Picture 1 (tube, one colour):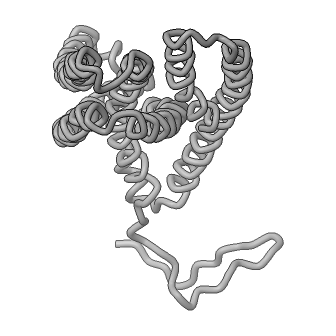
Picture 2 (picture 1 turned 180 degrees about the horizontal axis):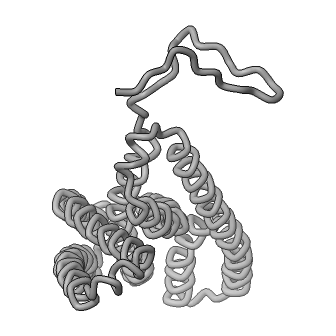
Length: 316
């Protein structure tokens, strides 16, 4: 976060150097270059630290959730264990948790983009409030696009993950009972069932891909549209003499600096929405309670060998 915030000072220093050059002064060029080099070193250290700890956090959360899923399954009573499908558990403990890990591994992106955006906005407001307001016009549009995509993407992702779990369940049952399938000559029937389920999964994945493509494309195009407005207004103000050349080039540098992180943030938004759907599916297992529970006054079993004695038991 610190390194990304310092990175936003780069265009400002470059603008100062340009203004000095236009005024015929070059005595601060060496100092500005050394300062840019120091900022690059600090940025490297901060970026490494953020990404390392984000990856470690993602792995730790995935490990904790997988352990919680296993412990929850162990608490189920006999009825729930009979109703539980192995494929569903495997799918949620692997593919869904993998989606959560990917999202947590990308946490440095919103943190870094937020810090970079905050420093850039402060610097731009100091240089030219009108140009800054034009730059910020795309922020509400980005928020609206993200909110709208979440409404449609989360249910579509849940449906696709559920269908993937259905396929995993079918594969597990077929492989476990392969002798029964072959004994009754049902190979073609099972293959047909798998093909039908795979086609349904393909259709659901295509819907998710279409929603992802639309949201990502819109959120990536909006900053470019903002660049057009800022460059047009900034060029007009520079020609009138309202702002100097260094300020105009500084804004152009900030627009270039923020364009790449904006696309990364768009990708993270889509990934986070998918991870939300996966998290809901995982916690359906973790939060499930057994129907048969211990009596509130039940006592713990004593240590050592135990025996069960039945008296006056009849069958009918």
